Length: 233
Length: 291
Image 1 (tube, each protein chain N blue to C red):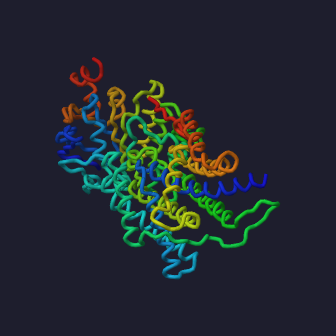
Image 2: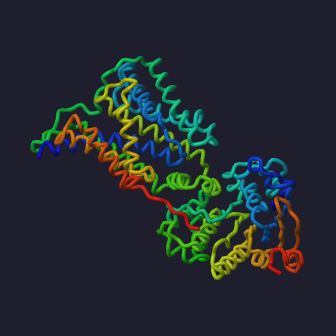
Image 3: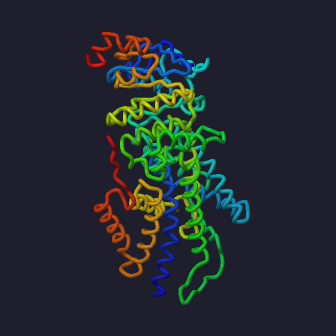
């Protein structure tokens, strides 16, 4: 479904991505793991068009999207739930969700909204509240819900567990699995490697802008190198 | 008491125009972070277009008015496209300097095209004054207050309820995330420049009977609209409207009851005091980010 081939990207002079090649197959959860600054978020940004790659191709369903504008990429069906949630603090919960559906022209937006309220009942309760007044966990749910409002074929999730209490993290990961079951492909960036490997089908491990290891999530979970570096023994 | 009401009416009349112009400033500032110092000059140019259509081409007043609005749409679009968008990655200071440069370009162009003379331009409504229980009211003042009210109501409906309005507010709050959600941010910028230029043009045409149409006509309105925006708070869309009305009314009341010579000093003194107490403006909010 999505294929990055030899992608290099820069922030000014900083070489953020060095010849990254990644593949995401339809219907799977693929996770990108690695420490801070390994290039996980940069990879997502090049996919969503926020960061233009210097080199390499990004293919989505057979066509090159590396030169497309972010709004066109969203229309194609790739939607990102950004790191640190980044909900619009002075829009209500409902308005935030409506922003997510901005590119949609079909009439079924209401149904999607019902489904999202199904996933996250708290959002329905707070639909008229300013998003800035939500707790961290609720904002994370809103960010994911907002991305889902676009009815993405591929959902990019950037650090959904960041700064959240363990109980809420569990809840969010359960919902990520459900979203996959409903047929959405997911590319998940996480620092919580243990959790991510538990739900992912395939994983890439990034270090300083390069893919250093990849494989089946189950195999990586028992890999001794991964264990010592990312899973705490 | 009659004088009091009359001052309030006069204050609301000019205050409405400050409010329109201030709303234009804030709209551009909130969406694209640019402070458009050339708003006054652009409004002047549009007012000249209305005047030329009316006086030169002998169009009826409503048509001349509409013609100037159509011109303002194009004008705002072109200015954003030609001067602002290419500099989208420039620093805030650079962008402000671009709009300062625009003052010279637009002002110079107006001088070259329209000359430096000052022309009388008629009021929107020419009719006899009304006398309501001793309070003399000009129909034109009512018209100005009413038209401002309708424009504001329409604009606030657009901003609060429509898809485009939500997109404008989302872009104003976080441009990058807005892009990530598929909002065509450059279209939002274009739109806000067009709306702001229209608001400026309306303020310019309606103030013309008081100031005459000349290249320097917008000086005071422009300055006061800035102060209205600062007083009400650049952070909200309602602030500048309230700020504009307050300045208009205060100006008149102080002039009437305290001192005509000192009114500017007293009004601005009060404004400075307000800002010392509430630096973000009346409707301004300080933002805190959740970790």
